[in-house]
Image (cartoon, rainbow, N blue to C red):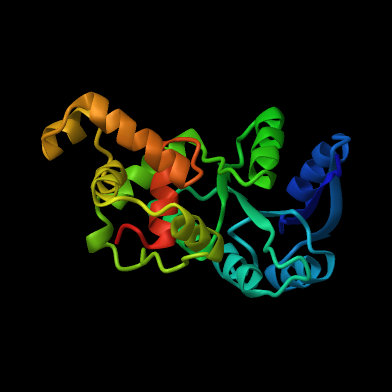
Length: 231
């Protein structure tokens, strides 16, 4: 198996060195470039075309949200943009959702353990999302308030999600269930709100996860927002 090719964009020297050592100790990970600011980071990503970019939000020139947007707008020879794993101290609501809206795939807080970071990197490279448990709560709670939060406009509908939905479109009922998932309701609450049985809800949830290629409800909620399925 080819190693996971990684670009690290982190402005804090000691943090970058520590992360670099952690990554280099893994035989299945190749650190192909590093950068201490956003502009250099985007250039390194464009040149090296990594599998995953580990990105800090608090960069000295342009923030990680803008870096994410710029990376996602680049044209790569493979035709695929690298996956982006946010690794930052910032866990406020607006930053979290703005990162996902810009195209981030995973979001970790910097107190993450080395083992969890490697797992997050592996899952991200495979196309799954790794969301810090604290951030999962932020995502669902903030989604409920999305109509009153002007900074959270999810318009980063990516081609891969469009292709998935074109191949396996959601039914009207599945879309209703997905909307309730995004709003943070449990299966029993969804059953009550839609006047269906809990068993039927579970079936719809399973179909939704399969169609969105999502591992869990939180990932499905994020993909629903990023694909524009739920406004």
